[in-house]
Amino acid sequence: MEKIGIFGGAFNPIHYGHLFIAAESLNVFQLKKIIFVPTGNHAFKKEDLLDKYTRFRLVKEATKTVNYFTVDDFEIKRESTSYFIYTLKHIIDLHPDSEIFSILGEDAFLNFHEWKAPEEILSKTHLIIAKRFEGNFTRTKEYIKKYFSRFEKKLSFLDHPLYPLSSTLIRKRIKNGKSISFLVPETIEKEIVKNGYYK
Image (cartoon, rainbow, N blue to C red; front, side, top):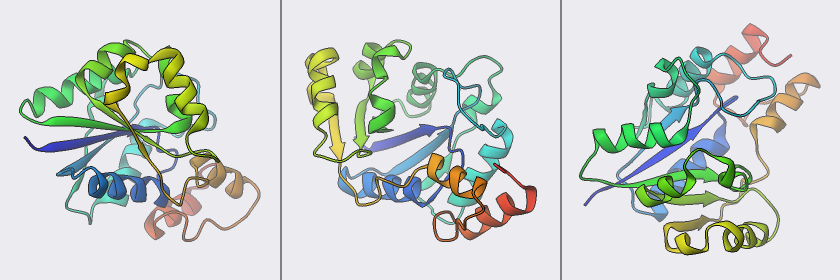
């Protein structure tokens, strides 16, 4: 059975941290491909969120040269609020014979109990939790014991060297007039600067 990764998120904006985590997940967990799914109408309030069509276009641009990365517009086309359980079911319908691995940042996972149908999600997919904090996933392991101990076998940790890099950091640098070169792909940087995004 082939393994497929889903990488959902606002990607506001997409950056090299996202791309590295996707590639690292693919290698570590022996996935065939990663499907990026940019959030459409976000369920949780997000600061300085670019419109969904712009974010989708930037993700397409950032991933277009990598043959094991694809981008799905399921959430972009939806008019209602984006909930991951619906996205997951959509991907499962497209790949009924595949084992699904969903990539999630450690910070986002610490709110997972507030998501729509978290236990149903865990019954249908493995979660790859990518490092976002200092320490060896200490807070996250405590969180799992509190809320999701019976799903521990479905939860895996991805350590990586780029965990301090975030979209929040990039937006902050833009607002402070600092360069974002080598933090995002060059074509993404050019579009952000040209259009004055996040100023």
